[in-house]
Image (cartoon, rainbow, N blue to C red; front, side):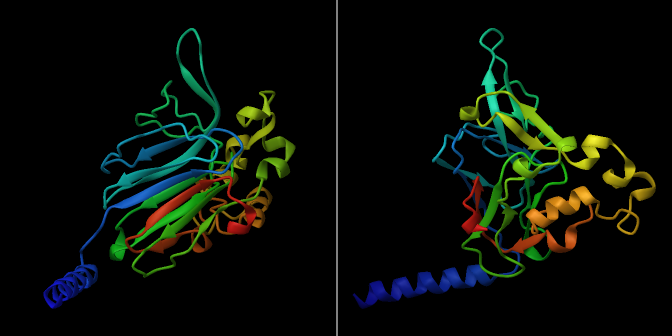
Length: 262
């Protein structure tokens, strides 16, 4: 009994030492949870030069959760596709929001067509920290929450996201409207475009003469997003209140989270 206790104490001590060693990094698990009343098809895109994940897209039925493992040095983005269907003749798979252009459930290296709510991650970045955010810079299509779990501490390690229904409050000039049945997540306004996408003007896109933090300021449209979702990126230079850091955490990504979880 004493020998077993000694063995367990050594295992515990070794674990503590490993966790405290500088430069030791750990893989992360992203758990996707669907609390929407309809199916969501998550899309996953690895950054250039980043290790690839085991999947780039899948169906996530209402009430289901699916884990996806990521290497320790992974970076990329994730989003939810909605109002998706497969053509009965061609077999091509398309989504009304967040479509990645692959023609299949797997995105295969394709990114989200705006408007789409994005979760962005860089694992084991500067100082060994994970950097993450939820972005509305490319518009909004559904509520999303990112919650770190079990991190070893360090940084601004907290929940972020956008739990508000921006489709319901979207200005008419930004709305993406569908007549598809609400049982598929469609009907009415299914997404809210960014001002950049809607109007293409440099002052909204933070481009050209507006391509610096000093010259590109929040617009009335980005401020509408920021007011509803204060922790999410609302425009390109919204770093100060929208980037979060954590060390060696796993992450739960919830679509349509309850407002009480913000």
